[in-house]
Length: 414
Image (cartoon, rainbow, N blue to C red):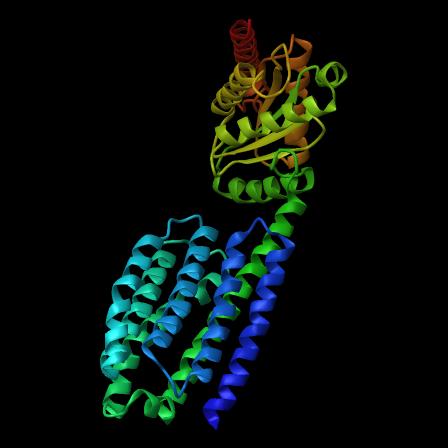
């Protein structure tokens, strides 16, 4: 009676979870891994129904149907997890393992070898979950759903190893029909169903948290370039400065602007202008480090906050971005002439706020545009503290550096 109740309640709950996962997939059908999760939940529900329907007539082919329904669904779910994590999954090896144990299961059922049947079947499932746990362990967790999923894989693998021994020790002399009607079978059904419910909840939590993170990223990311929006960039650089100033780490700000962008839009159309902006965003992301922050702060204006980097190295980074933009400008942008970019660079000063830092970098950008565009100009450093003569010497030296860099970049552009 208990087993019959379980075969109604558990499939109903898993059917609800399957419907939730299918609905989550339907909202974004590009995420095929969510569809794989839904298929696994549906197949588990179907497996419980099959088990209840053929409890008293487990023929050899019924065993194979039950086993393949379970293992293929688990393999699909593991494939989905790996795809979501952008990892390779050993699907051919898992299918080969399942195929190898299939004839053993058939003959074990044919000759009423219950212990062999349980051991082989659970070994197959346990190995699949062990492989999934190993793969998940190598991936840095994104959210609590990832951690719950990892430990559910571990629990499933451990249970699959322990289950045959527990069953054989208590019910070793039973036939298949007697075993299916026994309290041990009900207990195994409850335990495996609880783990499956935990797994389904972990998968749903992981997908929902992915959706929340994606919505957050959309809110802080420019849709055309994938860089931070202005508000998100300003928030990030203020956090960066708050970390850098107390420990004396240098932070530099690069402000850049695509030259004659209005002419690009007027000559080639706004679609071509969008492709120029998108292409330049790709170039910026390809040149900066993971510790740096880049944002699109206006139509054709961009900013890069360079962590632990004085002004001169930041200017060299800006020049590499400038050269990359000029050399790749005609690719995929429908332009018949290269687009160029001007840059202003400023290094943070002691006690300086972000707004003042931005104003200095923006003034350097204005100087770059006024002196011919397609070049990098560095704002003057903080005045020296050794008197008027030292201050003048420092300023003269910096102006000489600016002129030298401007001439060099103009020459390279020509």
